[in-house]
Length: 426
Image 1 (tube, rainbow, N blue to C red):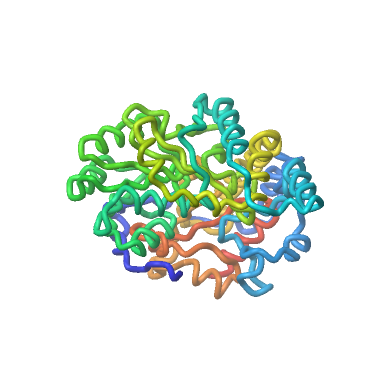
Image 2 (cartoon, one colour; image 1 turned 90 degrees about the horizontal axis):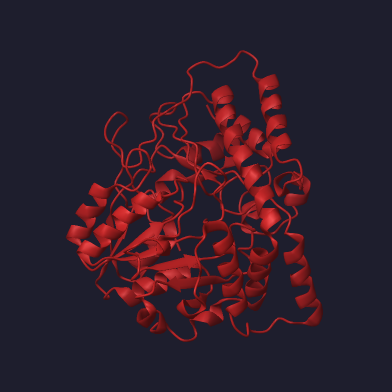
């Protein structure tokens, strides 16, 4: 399905920008940054020496047949779609091998193991239980969100979003005939209470899709921000559906707060999958979790919706949550190191490119407007001139012009080569 490019452009630099991340880079480049780049890469590698991000070389990765490494020509370095350059966690690989050896490739018997694993993980990491009786399986997070939108709004209803935002959310809402109303993020890339209230006032009884953590900006809503959202949603009868696929990917320095843990969220929903945190998008499974006052709505979802979750997906995600904690911690350490590395590389090689270091996800959202003020889609320039693939900023809607999304789930060496190629696009 083609992405929607109809969102209005952001205000020019210096005006109020719905996602305005101001340029933070210095204005001069060292005469010979190569030694500094090498030192920065070595420091990032040393921060997580046994982590999964340094386990695989580019030759191995280019043998893969999934989208990240096959969509573009072989001379392009891909840091676009949210796949991670990591080996499969051994407990997950073992479970999948055993299932294949048994010919155990039928339909999932149930999703209760998945729920139990998520419940234990959520209690340990976030202090929040996941009640089994308030869950249903779905194929993936976008399917869960789309089905909830269809259930909770009339055919001519409204979905409110906060762009810049992961494009399929708005695309699928429009595909279902829903009107999309925007409540853009504030200049720091956070939820904007005034924008939310304006949108909710124009569309009472709508659905608001919360992205927690937010894709592409990487911001992680604080508890007080979620409480403000809950108050506004309650005032205007808005149902909140939270996309929490990136929930486990919040390294130290920020804290993930589950939407359904906040007062006022009782009529809301969360949709979760282990696919991003353990790199399992090819074995699909996800869970819809209802708030305590949303059980009747949950029961109204189509009874066969769970058939879209694959048996291998349920097995893999369950094992990842139960036995993949140490692997995840190594992954998070590597992502945190790559965030620091990207900041340093932009200082050295691309001064004038703005970056607000993300709090969550393995994504970053650099701002190229100061360096290339006449370039609305830097990703196109980077692909053509630098042979490096990022996700185009305009695809994410309002606030996306002059930006691109970069995937940090790669080795420090690959990230450094990507920024070198980006610098060559001048």
